[in-house]
Length: 135
Image 1 (cartoon, rainbow, N blue to C red):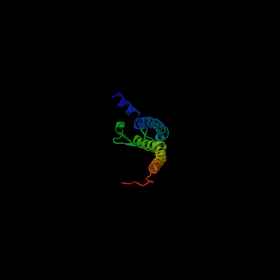
Image 2 (image 1 turned 180 degrees about the vertical axis):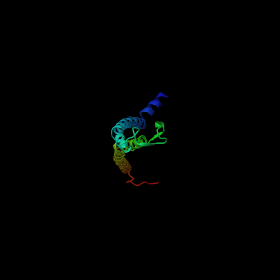
Image 3 (image 1 turned 90 degrees about the vertical axis):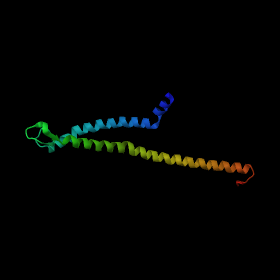
Image 4 (image 1 turned 30 degrees about the vertical axis):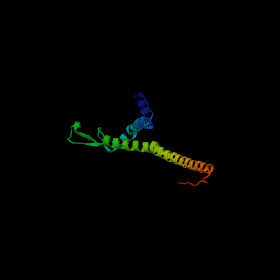
């Protein structure tokens, strides 16, 4: 049972997932800081002189009825920025590397097949069949 658990932990998928979670968390922190420092102040420009930011108030003179649009826009921009960063920093390079390595593996497997054919032909010549297969 412990051996199976060890194999599960050491599989590539689990390690990749752990790395992705850590990298994603780091990107979230960076993007959130960017949003708080740059995007939110820019959105506040569109909010006018209202202290509450970008949005609208359902009932005049009741701050509790304020519908904030700024956090929704910020969250959407955070999502797009994080998705783009993860794609262009992790997913795309990994896919290119995998395609490059899989070509090398395919070439090796073709070479192995050719070597097996060569060995079979050599074996057939040693047996005197001249490389022909007789039934």
